[in-house]
Length: 202
Ligand SMILES: [Mg+2]
Image (cartoon, rainbow, N blue to C red; front, side):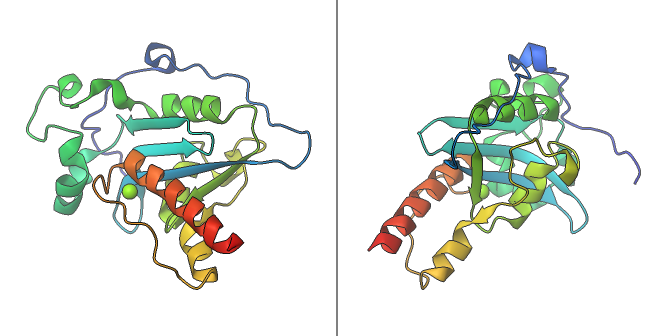
């Protein structure tokens, strides 16, 4: 595939971003795993998926929200501009480093990967998303190929939608505002999961 110009690229490396690649260890005692609820926003064209933003909420309440400064914004559809990028990027701004509405959110993918590893360290993660397939692919690609997923990470994602179907498709809590913000959506995923757990337990 031809290499397209990286509009919006901001040269932030892991060190400058404040993220260190820490030694990643999983909890090997027992089978206790930790639930992580995540959502991504992305640009996709039927062939490739390009990460815009990722939000992750741990079951213990910790949150991570980062945006991908390597995202090729020029490929975004009008729908993505209106519903996702309009809250994150000044569309007409020409200065790359100042086009981000909140510059602190934006990092290169290597830094996002390091932040996720740090966020999940010392746990045995179990990942959940809603209609999870595309989210899972774009998540995995932060690490390279499927085979590059860190030791201790599952090679699949749980889907809250499947969980809901298996319980007879009860009405899920309403999200309210914030839809298409990856962190707000990840928070809702946690809420939906907890609701479904309560349904399951009766
Ligand atoms: Mg979303």
